[in-house]
Each structure stands twice: as structure tokens, then as C-alpha cells.
Length: 357
Image (cartoon, rainbow, N blue to C red; front, side, top):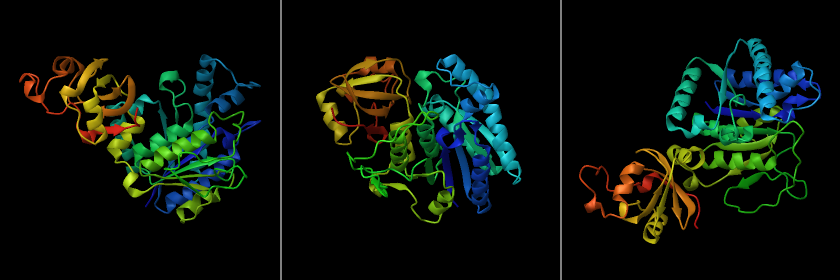
């Protein structure tokens, strides 16, 4: 059966009186049907800050980070209570998962998260996912839950990502739904839809998230979340919104998907012309092609690859930064035996190109 991630944003969950409890009840009813049909479902939800505002009877959102974090801490409890009560009606249990970008970009934490999700699936518990706004600062924030939902889908190995919005999908300039959105189209003229007063993401954010998920092998859709029947339609093989498509040969393996979209480089390696040409021909990076090393990193860490001071790729290194300072510019045969472990500094299979410079 399928693994399904449903992302529900503040534009659907929040009204002038706070969280729309009836909407969550209806959503949980649909999710319960999917679970009873042997599917696994995770919900990526917004709404913590709105819950906090409502509980404290605040008229407007706070702009400073301290107040936002406090409101999210207060509201998250209320939000989870609503989900818990709704699922309890159907005899289903939930688990709260609060995440920051570091939980994905750090390989060990990424694998620990996957193991947690395996355990929850074993116990038939529904993950309710949100950003950990109470500790997230700018450098580890997702920016919006669209990106979070895509990263979570990749981590969980989801079959479907449904990005729920308040329109019928991605609209073209004439206001008509684009039924299929190919990833290899560089420019597609779409209608500009203003963000709501409650949400942090817009249609561009949802498109970016859907592209990320699709290239990683997840079937991504942007659909109108006001009609929850759309969730069931997707599972029946219908397309009630915009489906993102790409060719099978352009889909990334799980490892390369993590490397491209989720990993965070811990340093930089600057390379020469020969190494740049070799990497673009899908060959490995050798010590002789390295001009300079920037930052501190260990064997197995992810680094950014730079040519003419511009980043064009990421890769997993076989040597630490200290070792590379010693062997940079050397031929493989010249590497000291006390350091030598691999011929390649980065193997071709552990490189993902991000564009030419």
C-alpha cells in the first residue's frame, strides 16, 4: 500500500477565530479511510502560532522572533490536542514530530529520524509533523512547511506528497489549471497568487517543494484542500489538480536526493580546470585537481565544490580537511602512505552537479 504525506497550510487551517476545528475533523475522517485501506499517512501541519494567538486572545500576530517562538510553543499543545481528539474518535493514535533543517542535513540525525518513522509505522501511529519553531533560528528554519513536507517525503520514502492549497492547482496566466507540470520546463508562465495573512509560503514555494519531491521519486500534486475528496481522487489514479512529472532516468536515488536537496556542506573544495571538466563528465575528483580547501570537515562529510569561486556541485569526501591540506595538488601515487585510504577524494557516485559556472 502507499505512503502518503498530506501538507496542510495555515491558509486552510486558520480563520479569523483561530484554528478551524471542523476542517481538522473532516481531514482526519479522510485520513482514517486511507489508514483503514492499509495506507500509511503522515500530516505536515501548520497552525501552532494561530492556536497560541487564539488561546491568549491576541488580535494580531507578533513580528519579533521571541514572541513568535513563544506563541508556537503555546499553540503547538493546543493544535496537537485537536488532532489527538479527532483521531481518538476513530481509535487511532498520533505522534508529534517537530523538526528543524538540521534534523535532515545532518546524516546521523536524518537516519535516526528514518528509524523513528519506521517504529511509528510498526505501531500504526500517525505522524503529525511541524517545524520546531520554538528553537528554530533563521539558519536552520525551512522558511515554510512546503519545503519541510518535501524533505519529510524524501526521508520517509513516501509514494505521494499532496500539497493542499486554496486554489485548484497551479494556474496559468489565463487562470486555468496546469494539469501536468514537467520538471524540465525552465519557464512556465503561471498566475501569481498572493500569500494569505496566515501562511508563510505561496504558490512558488509549493512548486519548488513539488519539484524537489518529484525528482526524488515522490508523486507530487498541488490540489485544492477545500475539497478533501481530492485526496482520495489522487489515490484512485485521478488528477484533481496539478501533477508534477519527470522521466524515470532523471529521478534521483535516495542517496543523491539527500545529497542534492537536504545535505548541508561543512566546507568547500576549490578545484582547477581539469578537475572541473572531469566532474562534468561524471568522473571522480582526485587530489591533483584541488587548488584550495576551505573550512573544517571530516571524512564522510558533505562539501561544496567550487570552480572560479562559484559553487557548482556537492559531494561526500573520503578525506578530512586536514588531510586534504597535505595532499592537495598531488598525484595519487604521491599521497603519503600514512594518509592514503582512497584514490579519489570524492568518488563520481557521490557527486551531485547543481549547474555549470
